[in-house]
Amino acid sequence: MVNRYYKGFVLIAVFVITAIALYFLDPIAQDLAYHRFSDCRTYLGVPHFMDVMSNIPFLIIGFMGIRLARKAFKKETMAYFLMLFVLFVGVLFTGLGSAFYHYEPNNFTLIFDRLPMTLVFTSFFGTIIYDYVDKRAGAWSFYTLFTVGVYSIFYWYYTEIIGAGDLRLYAFIQFFPVLAVPLILIFYKNHQLYTKQLLYVIAAYTLAKICEHFDTQIFEFLSVVSGHTIKHLFSALAVYFIYQIYKERIVG
Image 1 (spheres, rainbow, N blue to C red):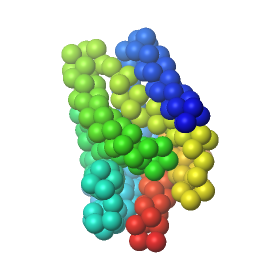
Image 2: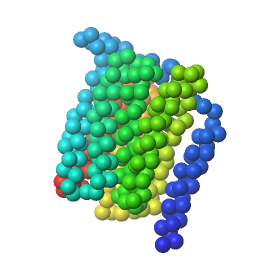
Image 3: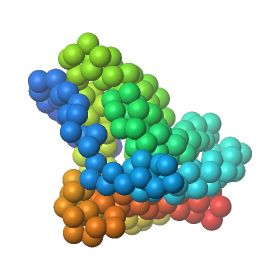
Image 4: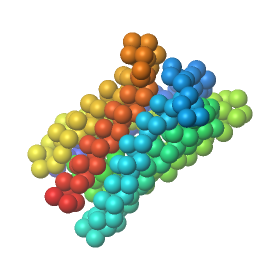
């Protein structure tokens, strides 16, 4: 029992320390250079064609996941069903929102990219806590982070409008799970769950972020495809691994 409380204390401490660290950072405005992608080619009248069209896998996986979530309605608790449903609705709208953003990159269209991604982050993290740590804690984490995550997007955009852009809260929602999930996998070892599959998710997402960072260099080297386009494909692969996790649990 003491060990259980110790593990929970460590996770709460990481949460608090991360929140305090971001609070004491200066407000982080959106760098407008973020909207300048290396592959600006237009095909069939669609600007940034490759970055737009590479979102199609999200649409496919989103539809697959929503159908899977419907099967979970009778097998799982309402909280777990909601997390799965929100997750894959988020995946679907990530495809639509990201395509919309890349068609005309700016701060306003970026809302439609980040908002559905926030649904994916918060619901997926909620299911991990639900499965590995505690069902009640997982549901509570989902409801809380979902609310704060949605708020963080509109808070960021409002601060940009008034000339005081502040991405700190959104950064917390996106990156706290990145810190917490490895600790959960270390503390709550359970060979009956999906630790190996989660490592695949983490690996694919890490490769996606690397490709995003080296967008220009990859495009200059390959010429035919940019790092950001490949980022979309690796991100979709990570989502597909997530889909496989829940398919194995629900369908078997």
